[in-house]
Image 1 (cartoon, helix red, strand yellow):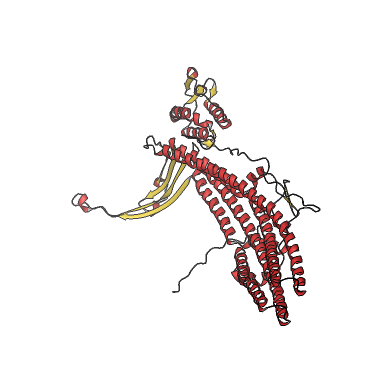
Image 2: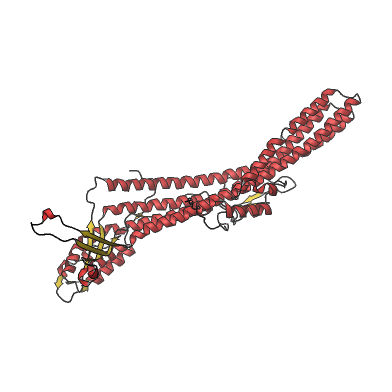
Length: 572
């Protein structure tokens, strides 16, 4: 079988268990006859303590060190080893050992630096924003955008978003599941009571003899304790604890996505409002152009074709307004739902246009190796790998005997007055050993299944790391190239404004055709709208970069208390 996941260190206690099983039988036999054994002048109690200490240190222990046959001499002195001491010694022997592989975090090769080069410095001035590899705190990265309203919206989203509360509920569920598994390490005690009145069949008695009805009063306690000698339950507890940590990281990942979505929707909303302002300004300009064409036609210097062209361009610009207004309102609805409120709750608050939050002059992002500790999805995948590794040990524990201590204490009587007398007491206690010697390969198949699940978790972990690296590189290249794009669009807007001004002056003086005026105005509209889109894209690329870096998961969250569904009462 090909090994996909790097082989983890196996527990050395596995090699000691056949020795412990071999010597447990004579130990219990000696305990039952109340003998005290001496092994070369050293009591068995001290020798067993040394075995336990070596087991916990991970050292190998040979069978000859446990029982030295030449010096094995039984002694019939005072009672030293009793049955309960035999069980306790056996529990101590196995208590520090667990079967299965011990998990170690795999080493993932990470690049030393990011592959995207910084933005080149334009002649005469600094670039709009530069990315550095300096270490930084990304807990509240949105505050670098210098937008108090965005900060307020994110704070409200962290407190009221329902998906984030759902992720927190999953964490609480994982903790409860771990408590269920951990409860198997302790004893279980049941209490019961019963009363029965019975009458024997007359056909089963001799003729002339009748059995009167009998009463039976019974109450008592029954308990069972499964000794986790080979660590199967403890491995399951480890897996449950790793699952809790994975659920916490999933909650953090939900928080990262939530913060990024709120910031992206807010920035997009402000970008759409900027486009609406550009369209409105262009409509006013186009109306003046229509008036200018009418004046030229009235003075006999132009034809009605220029008026038709000007009106067509005006109508085309006006047609851009309804889709932008639809997008504006939908973004407000989306932000309201992200905050856990009704869709129309923020219409009045966010309808007033504001500028797109500018990007900071410097963006420190750290090194690629920091993603393993910063990205919540990477941390969650690593914890799921640890949980899958622990499940292998839980499956291997089925290969070994299961020892259970059963006990009961009952009070049984035929008369209620004698129910709790000393003569009505019945009790019993003793071990129960079961060993699945032959299972038609079911246990071995289950172990292989858990190993394959571990391999899948390992591949998922590696793929998650690669996806995280790709997302950061994608955001970096987009952020870099969009800055160059914005610089070019800024120059285009400046030149188009000059072209519009010159074309209008030339047209008034009769030195150019009206078509050049319309073309210049259309080019200005397109370049201005593209510049707004570039500003919007640049800010969103910065948000994507912060999200790809795993920023925002450690931000303080003031979640409301968990609420339960209201109880439905029926009218009587």
